Image: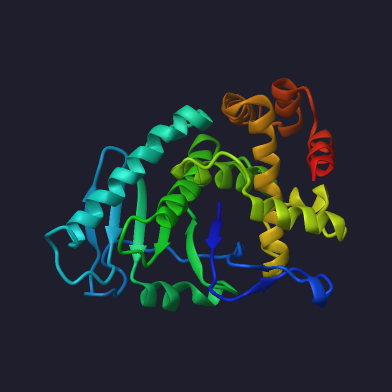
Length: 285
């Protein structure tokens, strides 16, 4: 199961009239293949990956931090990353009802090494992705952005651990991961900018149909379409949480894992089907 979270400093645009284009600061694109890595297999900032473990995670990092000790040292960074991961792990059960039974590997790469190893797989710079292992690009401090990336990818890992053979529609898999990632810093709803983007896309009849969002991934999309696909997916899950409560998302995720039937799980949890969800979300916009 391959899930990727990508960001770019470049301006990303929708395919809408040039006079009214909206630029975005981030794009989410999926790649078709990733290469495995083990500790010590890559060459990083100092030529090796440092390893540290916690109750539920095994962390490998090789970012460019000059000193090992002190408030800005690599050991402190590793401790903070593991603390954030453990916080995310506890939130998994509370918000999604998922608790991976085995330790999850997380690898944080030096940016240059990450780009050299994975750049050929992406059209834009990746912030992180999941493919059996959570892989993160080049953070040296636990920022809000890193926390969101870790939470996002952990949601994918949790779904994979709970139902490894279940292929979820992308709107559900990415929508839940985005919603869970936003909760890392307490964000509960779409912000004004996100609502403006969705509203404008709706006015221009640029919203993506459910048939597109229900694919196994968004890998075939260009950056602008993929950005919109992720935002729509997040918006659909946020709509459910806002109208039915956060606890409904947990019930829904558990129902999906148990029944492996998305339509049935939606109807049992919310009394609506997938098409109803799409229509109601579009109507709000």
